[in-house]
Length: 140
Image 1 (cartoon, rainbow, N blue to C red):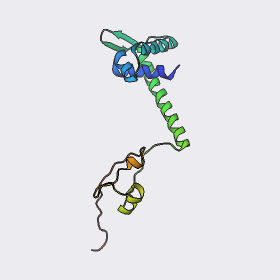
Image 2: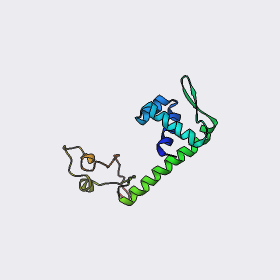
Image 3: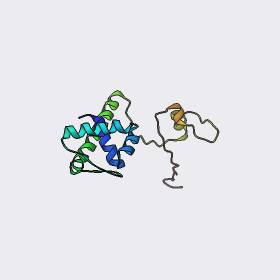
Image 4: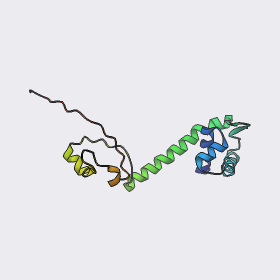
């Protein structure tokens, strides 16, 4: 079983048709149809009922759906695991920064009064900024 056949199956099932599924995969419709034909041959059952306006899953297609989703999820997990080993992983880091640390991490602002654009210095870094309020603790 080829991973691209499974991807084609899921794209068609999600979109409800070969044309839309093919477009989502950036493939020609005949190429997508061939992938499904090979998958159906390998599984020994049709996965889609072809209708005048789109497709629906057959009983075999409905049975295969959660396994196809698990196959792709497992593949993504494997890719993430290798990325983590290579040091190219991704994830979420939450930091509370004082202005001095902000300058060290992100650099000097491009325009006065504006924070610097971290995407220019670190293109793979995604950020979300929130304004925090500091409350005084203890006696005033």
